[in-house]
Image 1 (cartoon, rainbow, N blue to C red):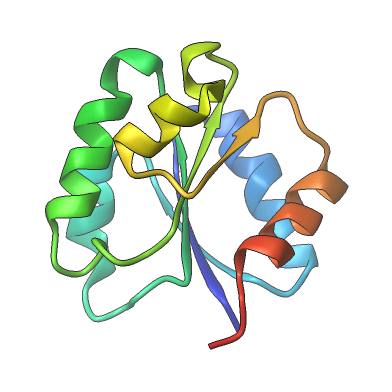
Image 2 (spheres, rainbow, N blue to C red; image 1 turned 180 degrees about the horizontal axis):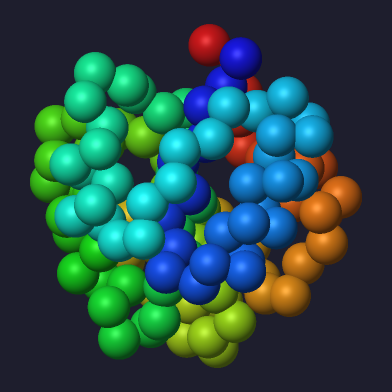
Length: 120
């Protein structure tokens, strides 16, 4: 079973995301910040990270994830409605795998996750 780490400070969005992922049989880990996520991972290695954040702190959050040995090789999907985040060159400069544009449906989330998680 794939484990998805959801990092987002917006409780309502976290609840909806977690509910959708669990209904599709994904295990979920929740953190309200990147630092929280790093602290709570322990020996768990998620399959995918969903990072919801503001444009102002996106670069710092991605830098932390890409520098940490436990998360640096994990695909990171940005959840955002910021226009700059939707630019492929900007996504690449951050090291993001893809962007999930807000708002999105539970079905879109599940379908997109399935395409991002490739069998090893």
